[in-house]
Image 1 (cartoon, rainbow, N blue to C red):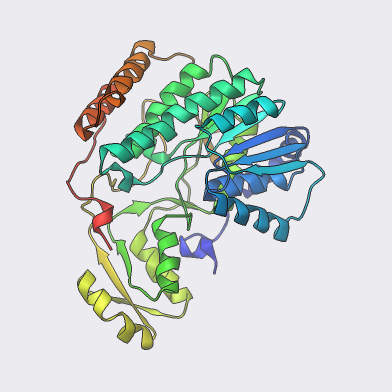
Image 2 (tube, rainbow, N blue to C red; image 1 turned 60 degrees about the vertical axis):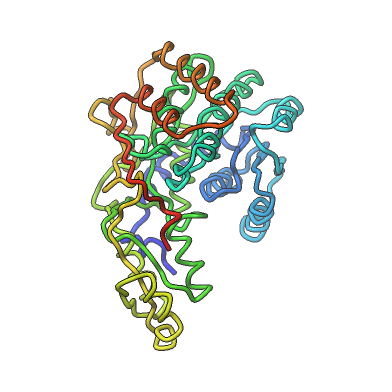
Length: 395
């Protein structure tokens, strides 16, 4: 199945830029020691593959998902084979004591790439998952960057999201706050990041859910009014690696909007997906109808679909990669834009976040409203959309 065709494109985004800079990329990788955090996720696996195929001296991968890590190794061995360098994986949590011990035992890394994140808007429904989101997206980033600096790293990369630009959900806002903390940390260690679109068929995504529903012969459900930009897994790996190796301190890379990158709806992708598999999408009027008629319709080479207007908390009508307040460099690359951040940060605001968060965590339990209030303080124009409805209530 052609992923590019499913997301409405006919060519990869970054081929020209990767080709133009391949000699530099390969030279930096071949001479480098790399640590990839969150390397068993969809983006992390893509980044790991991009590094591996260029033959690094050291490539160590950390992730809490033992099973996904096993699949990463099997996939690399089955496609790219082996390298002379030291390639190892560690099933540990970057927020734990085990990670600190690894950093001390490793001898240090030239490049540390952090791809770990809680990425789902559905994680906003309760204060407990929200606190975990802050821990992973903000606090672990600060911690791992400090460890990288202390162990002599040359560069730190951390993935952001397009949802950090004018955020309307807590996930996007957490990544925007992460970017604020990165500006402070950039005084001690050069860093870069990337904002990019949804990675097509990444683990846990709605498109990945299409594969699961098809395998289990279940209805496909998707919003018909939410438009998103999509990149392939390989494109996500290329963008992250280029930002890490070619980005200047505090740069944020993002895909340029062009005739090759379009907004598309999930329902349109669902139609193309089913057509590619030889099925005619059959639109049902309700979840109940889609479930009840699944066996009947599938036997007729029709697939039950429920397409709906989105009304859940945190959904944005469309995605954007930058705001009108950010300074852009659109000439450096053909298909990649760069947000250039000046040195400087609001120390008082960052200290307020740390102190307030510590006070909240010290309580026996937490309330979502106080976490939202803290985010509103950090991002005064934060347009959080609370509808009282969440994705877990959807099929």
